[in-house]
Image (cartoon, rainbow, N blue to C red; front, side, top):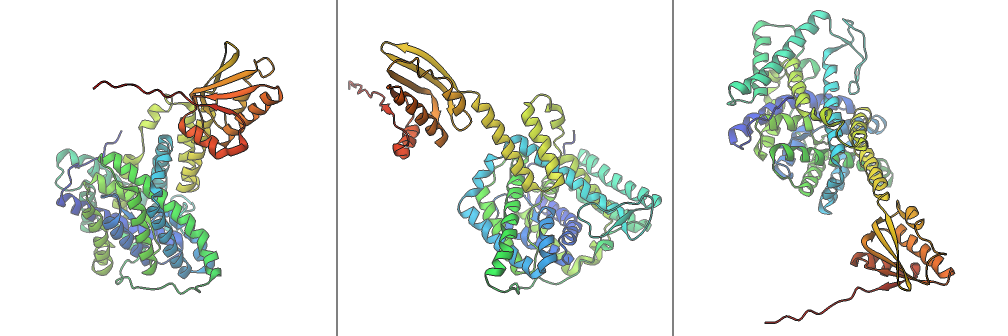
Length: 518
């Protein structure tokens, strides 16, 4: 429905301009996520700078943007509330070490276990989360107005919606921003449409003195360079007991979100990133960030989409975004704080429209019902809980559906070959199919010599071995002999490892020597 892909050719100009555009959108996001975690705004800004810079240089996906994220912030808030920000810094350091370990062990390859319906659900759910997060920008803390309400997840205070006039003004600016982003690429691609929209709307607000909320109304962003700081926590087992569970959860969420975003950027840019390198890059970034007073982070799908849609393809775009953010903190805060929030909200709304897989509505009735269920389930769980939980739930449900469908594929055909009873087995023999497998043999009616042919089947797990052993015991009690024929090499290996668990005779396949005439 909305095609937001821009330039597909990497260039220095595209990377620089798109990186600068991303930096502008990073400011309110980093500040908002710092509030969610219960820390100072600069803690979120420093994290966005350091994580973004290090992953841009050392990560496995050029063009992908990383920084402080809401998925991590909602986990951090309990730790900060109970133990303080120093424990958060120690947790982020340990989180980074765990992520680097995952990269060194090449665990990034397991992202291939995420089915496509889970990927679609992740994208749709995250698009909804990004949209809902922007609605809090229409509220004013402590004031009454057009409609009473409470802020969505992510706000630290109750808010009331803007008064009718202010709301109409902000909605108009948001619509203008979205219109520029949508129509400008049809005229020219010389400048990223998102950057042009921010500059035009900011110029109108400043030039005409329009009364609307700006970045400075959220929080001041002025500050100095991040300083090296070893977390002031006791270095003992009690501290490890406190931070280890949080570190494991944060490391898992960070890697899942980063690797899924990597796959999404791969699809859009038709290139291939390195998942294991990304794990190491994310881990290095978080370790350093924790030692310099940052809250940690991971890949940001919204900012990555802004970058890709603006033409950013190389590592330079992420480097420019991080360095521009640092420049805003050090010297440019006075100008950045004048940017209207409406412009940034409009940019994020267009990201939502471009991120959401609208084709899922078209295919929902064409794909298997189980896949459609997984898609909707993952989207809902992403919105209600968090990304990691949604992906885990989606993978588990998909695995159970796969096991159930394959369990129904087991077939046993009964034949008589001379003095032997012959069975042909087709389909996988594993925990889900063992019951159906065992019910298809007639032990009492069979001849004394029984052969089971596994040419069209495969013994997959210990449950399959147990099923064969159970069958062998039944034939043994009946005074009959059981042979296995045409087992694959890995199946035979399973039987060898099982030792005495399986008491059957395995008939080796004949091997023939074929004469060759020179």
